[in-house]
Amino acid sequence: MNTYHILVVDDEPDLCEILQFNLENEGYIVDVAYSAEDALKKDLSHYCLLLLDVMMGDISGFKMARMVHENPKTASIPIIFLTAKTSENDRLTGFALGADDYIQKPFSIREVAARINAVIRRVETTKKGNKKEMIAYDTLEMNPVNKKVLVNSEEVSLTKKEFELLKLFLENRNRVFSREEILTMVWSDEDGVLNRTIDVNITRLRKKIGQYEHNIVTRLGYGYCFEE
Image (cartoon, rainbow, N blue to C red; front, side, top):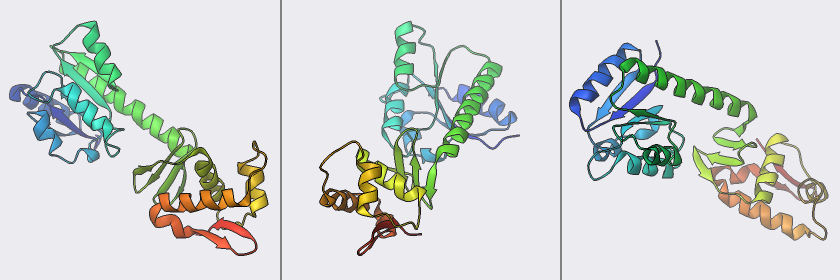
């Protein structure tokens, strides 16, 4: 039995009930919403997968998916579309919106369960791979593969040099780097970079990482370090 939490969003109550009953028998925890509007009132961030009907009221499944993926807190939640729309363009639209799968109605419950299981297994495998690459300090997380930095699960936008500075510090916590060392390691591809450039980039980096700004400390006469 698993404890994955799924949200089913469909304007057909009978279908929602059938899906909820059968998926709960598969071991999932299942909530339902009868419209995208109702679904968006929920805290979507704790669901591991969304099962969305495409043809609903004012907010279609496609529109809801776009809203989910535009929110950093929910952008990584996998989505499977359930729909009676069968044209190639509809399927391509779904996948263009980041759908992880697209199931046409009518469908068998066994097929839905199998596809959900496949998507969750694929997502979990990807997460495990990403975690191996992660560099983290408390809730400050850096992924060198996709070049993302998170603070308290919120993405922080860094320039290339800010990212490289933070990576250098996080990989070598409590080690003091002189300006000359930083220039060699971060600005190796540029000539004529001034010490002031380092100071400016570190000041910007501190501001962007919020509560962790004080971890990047200045050692007068020596340089900078990330202090635990």
